[in-house]
Image (spheres, rainbow, N blue to C red):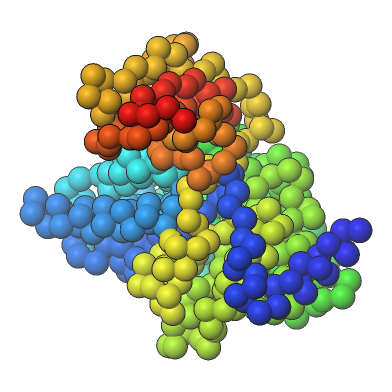
Length: 473
């Protein structure tokens, strides 16, 4: 039956696109993510912070990006935080990356990670700290040089670049130290591990794969333990190669996570070491659809968000058409999977209309990140004491307990308010216990519902209130 459903879906995605577009669903829960790259300022920043004025300019670049992402109903930002044994925050472990100030090792005069978290949360978006794990940059550059000086033998040289040694137990401790530092200092929503694998240049032998996979898993396990001890609600994820392993009918052509670079990503979700996976599925045709279905079949109730190579829409990068990406996105939604765009720039540059399609069709309504019910499944109490101001332009409420919660607000012309319908969402993950409403003189009654959500994503029952209209129905 499972194969039959996949076959029907595959047949559907190759039907004329206009017919498919009419049937698109809009789920209430779905991860919609972007990778926001800081290395070399690829996505951000495009200017250096070297004074108070240039810091404000750099910050405005980011807020402009986030405004556009919010308009596209993106709910998860994967921000590159550890770059190449360098960081975009003041770390006690590693030096500043040069992307922020223009000078490696020098502060930009403010904390970019703290600023980004605050601005994402202000817009109802999650921020996950993207940590590049094994590569540490050019051999003679600041990050690699300092790491090699502090921990002799921890870094190996391959060509012109340095890589941490997965076989050295100190690597797991060190990367866990970085992730713990970020988790303790910042109100992040997730730790996202990138390049948590062996370098492909090593060409691992089949006989060595079991121990190599255990070396990588040791790092993942160490990160999981440290982060859980600090803040158990912080999501742990990674971006494995897009194909986990060979399938019975489709070959990975020698490039897969399990047998090429020793990433047992499906084992990590099975064993509870990962909450989300963002497989880098920068492929098309039979290199995409069967392997995406395989990730879904082995999700073990966790959240799978395939990464799409939308950079191939650029003529300088590839020869993809927008219809190829549309079919992939429709397939992922039909399978109940999320999506992640690589990279942010190509989405916001609207290459081949990808941003317009995302705003106006794919992500027409907001979506909530799926709750981590495997960590905690107890919803908070509903808000209470909903009140409208005399002018009907301000709605406020109170919480029923002392826990810190976020709030979703719904609006409908029907009662009861259908909180399962994302079309009714007008604000998500709101931090304040009030919202400003538009000045309207409604002909009919309008109903508002407010729910509380905890850090695991569990949502309370709604509390409702009526804004009276001029007429009765």
